[in-house]
Structures are given as structure tokens and as C-alpha cells.
Image (tube, rainbow, N blue to C red; front, side, top):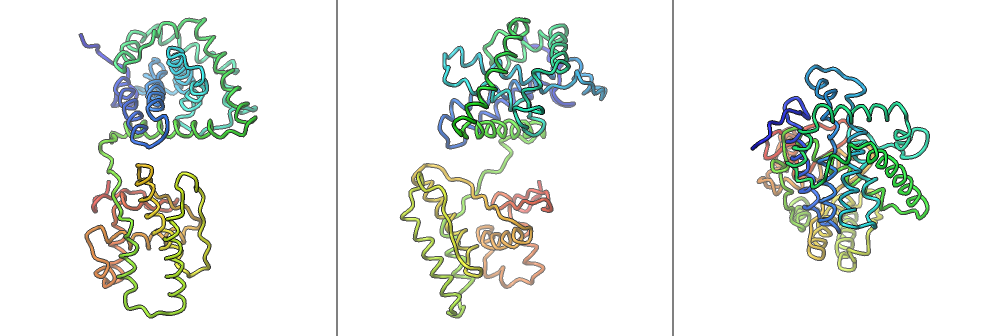
Length: 388
């Protein structure tokens, strides 16, 4: 017999649907990556996702959605984060995996700040202080009582629908809840001390990893897009710059500067044979202005990406980060000019166009090939000339 769900996460979406969708999306996002422990991490991402809006089950939040009545009791971040910690903690206790003690406090941090920025964990304004704040904890206790009084049956059905094998009644017991608060404090303090003592950046990057997974999945579902609607990464041939250069510079005179550019290009791209992709993580190209670093670096990146795919089995994104808006725009135009060659228009035709037509065509290049971003960039995504 099906349950009649009524609780909402958004004005036009039921809570159980949102948690189920975000859980599925989070898992898929992790599984499509080529990283160590991705199966285990996909499970943690799933648990974080199905817990992240737990406190929306209060009547206070439901009244906020229906009537716009915003109150302190309608907040959902802190209680949801406590629940997320509890869920992940129980998951590892059932598996008897004490070595993964750091993942429950990471889940707490991620859920706590999923509608804002991650702040310092310790200090006067630190996140952990919220667990010591009497007013904050009184709100959480009232929210717990409210869910028990009004919506506990539906909450249980929601978590049955997302396959959470956990006795939720225990979370609502005063003893178990107080015990959980104490464990969060201890684990978060331990997380900070371990990071500071050994200079270990692993926890820092895991927090950012799970935080980005939750935000991505949450916004995809809330927007109604879904992961299946997103365009897949396009293939870019590793020899694309070589072919572009043949057309772009055919007939160019053999000047001294062109000889320098060609020598630099050949030296950089040929160095790939000597690179160990698992060991050599930071590489640099040092050339004077005007020696063709833009095309050389782009060609090297494409060839390196092909080498990574061949040796490690996956093809990474190329992210080009640089200062000054004028340089971003200038380099993006060069890259677009190169990439338009696989967009169904020949480079020769492009070079023969009037400047206005050429600029328009470059501005229409698909965003799954190149996506320029800075604070003045046009906020639009284009696929095959269609704005989405």
C-alpha cells in the first residue's frame, strides 16, 4: 500500500522525491569520476544527500514554504547536519570500520553549510560553536519535538523510500540525541587537530569534494534539470592545434620570431615522451612574450590529456586559469578559433569572414567545448547554437 506523501522540500516538489533524486544524482556524479575509493565515496555521498534536508520535515519549514512565514524554527541546516552525522556514523559502525571516523564529521560540516560558504570550524565564530550555543540547541530540540509530534510517520516512510536501513526512533531518543551531539564535538575537534598536527590536506579536500557533490546534485534537482539532461563532454583531437597551425600560418614568411615560435612549440610538445603522468604533477613553460605560449600550452594540454587517457584510463577536463579580464577574453577568442574547426566550419572560411560575422560565429561556439567564465561573462550555456 503506497504512502500519501505531503511534506515538501520546495514549493513544487515533495521532500521524498527531492531526497531520492539528490541521493541518486550524488551517487552518479561520484561514480563517473576516476578516483580511488569511488564506490565507498559514492555511498557516503548518497547518505549525505538523503540527510541534507531532513529538518524540512518540521511544520515550521512547511509553513515557510506555504505562507512565506520565516522563523528561526524554520531553519533546517543544523538539525539536518546532526542527522547526517548520525546516519554516516551508524553506517560505519554497522560495517565496523573505525578507520573511517573522519567521514561522519565531514558529513556534518558539508550539510551544515550546504546553503552557504564553509567557515572556520574552530574559533569564536567557528562552526563547532553552534553546538555549544544554548539558543541554537533549543531551536534544534524544538524541531525534533515538532517532527515527532506531527510528521514522524511520514519521515519514516521517506527514509524507507530511499533505502535507509536504520531505526530512526533511536535518533529521536533524548539519550541518543545528546550522545550524538557530544560525538560530533569530539570528532570535529579531532579532525581539526589531526589536520593541524600533520599538515594533512586530505580532510580539507574531502570536505570540498563532498560539499561540491552535494551542491551540484541539489541544484540540479531543484532546477529540474537532472544529470541526464546535461551535455556530455565533447572529444577534442589531440592534434587539433597542429592542423590549425597548418591552415592559420600557411604561406607565412620564415621570420626569426616564427622560427622561435616553431622551435618552442616542437620542444614543448615533444617533451611529453619524458613525462611520468603519475609522478610529474607540476610542469611549467617559460617563454618570452610573443613566442606563442597560448597555442603551445593548449596543444600540450590536449596531448597530455590523451596521454593520461591512455595510461590512466580517463580523460580529464582542461581548466585554464589566468589573471585579467582582457587576457581571459583574448585567449578565449584564440581557443574558440581553434575549436570552431570541429564545429562544422572550416578555418579557411572563418579567416575569410568579415570581422563582425567572425566574432558572431566565435561567440556561438558550444559551451561543451569551451566555457569562458569571469564576473562580466555572459551567463548562458550554448549547445549547437541553442541557448539553455
